[in-house]
Image (cartoon, rainbow, N blue to C red; front, side):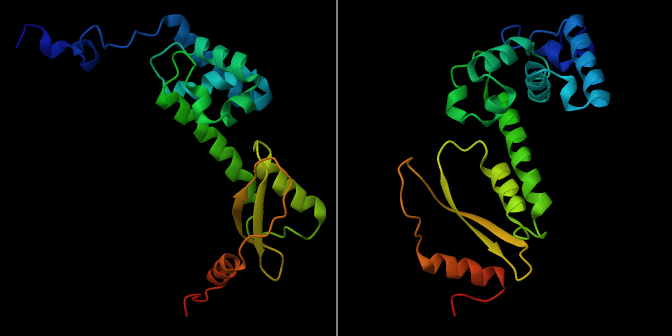
Length: 195
């Protein structure tokens, strides 16, 4: 064993070609400052590029994130557009790899699940506004129309939201096969539809 090897950290033992660049003291201070502003100030305390930075901190802990965040904002225009962009649109962003894209898409998934969880097993069709709030939250970032079937119980509580088809941008009549609807409806009510 080379002398002093036992005192090396795992990071120091990596060859210099694959060793990540150490964060500067300034980067650590910058991250701490953003965290310090985000917790007491809430979502409005940070600009869009800072929200992107904080999202990427989790996926890329040893990298300078600011250039990637600025590139994403320049390309997509806003935090919301960046996290909802298709995965293929991230390919040209320098420095952004699978871990960073996964972090951004995870935030999008969480944002889509929150409104669903809020209304699941609660009255949905008790009024038109409540239904429109739900659909707006679920579909707000979709670029192509969707035909969805909402399954409700007798108290108008949402049992399932099942996308049936995505559109092409052309007007069409939404008439899915009835057999699929009957099967899903039976399963939601605990009936064996194969019988």
